Length: 195
Image (cartoon, rainbow, N blue to C red; front, side, top):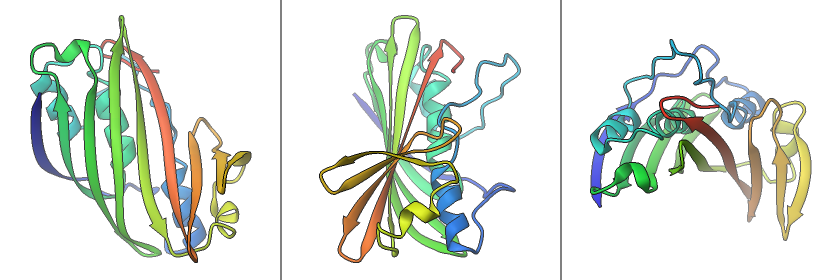
């Protein structure tokens, strides 16, 4: 196994976080889970996730892994540590542990995340999970989720919401008077592509 660490900086995009707390949460959890990576002209940003995919020699997951990494870290400064199998990276799971910091009006604080991708024949399947604490209570969070979010389940005291536009899911974990939002998204792709 190989372990590499790099520091990455992602600029906040034009649709970045805004000063209003509701918009902050909506933007924070509502990024599309399924990246548009099937286009031949798709150029991946030069991120630590792409660099790690190239260092590992990934083929099947050469797009899914970096795209999920970009999705996870959008709008944050971050550090990433990736792990893969040195002998046969393209036949095993690749994983990244990510520490993030958001510094925007309305949300300022840490978050943690995981990106996991694995080849499945000629395809690659992957997921990203982001964990972020919010000062608001979980009872207040549904109103802050993107319009069209639907409560799909209650797992013990954890509310699970399906986000609109293939945005994945948000789980609301109560912690005293505050709430930890766990965002989950998945992607599937072919060698050099995704869907």
